[in-house]
Image (cartoon, rainbow, N blue to C red; front, side, top):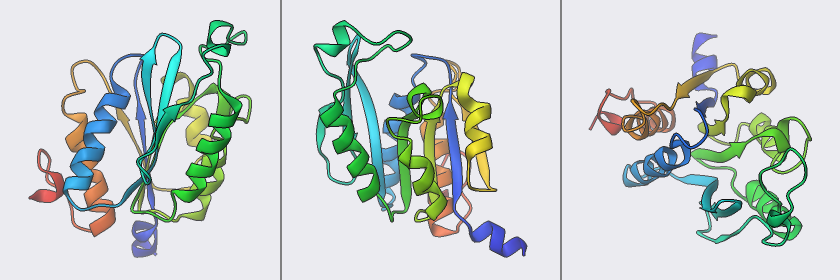
Length: 194
């Protein structure tokens, strides 16, 4: 029974305060994972302006604006960003095309998904399929408890990104990914124990 649980996919929740560097740390971790030969897919976001986000499809390499420049001037109450409906639909299709994979990345699941059940909420059903060895989800601290309650996996870990720890986070995340995909334990400070 223990072996069965250990062979199931794992989920890593990357959390930290706004602008602490979660996406930057994850981007570096993705580079390390790829250097280790892992298949990494999913979606990463990048702030390209005060109210503008680009999305990067890790499996295809496509990068495009996720926010609507006209809507971002008038975001909906309670929202920092005005999303482009066509770009959002494209990114949801890309989420579905991301699995199966070794490492499934979603940067980030926020109020749009957990409170409004919109945006990249399909990621939650994709997690249930277990078509990955490790999923890395970026979730803000205020939504962490809800994210944990909605996780389909019994095996998850929370990695907190802080100003003091953010330079170590890429190695930690990449090490967990190598261990999950290869079944070999990672050594702290070394991706895949290399």
